[in-house]
Length: 77
Image (cartoon, rainbow, N blue to C red; front, side):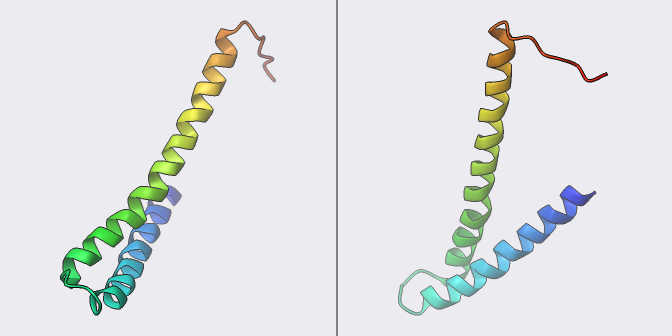
């Protein structure tokens, strides 16, 4: 449940931040406001999300390669 709340918060922050950035940038460019808003908002979600996903993927690969190399794992229970 908490993950969904955090994801929804990140989504709305990306939309709001993208809207503000698009408003500030649309005055000096020929790109339409809505297109710029969509691109900036998507980038605000995709870039941090891919960094977190990549870090998690590397962490899982590190654990799986460590267990394959013959290292013993101690169970706490």
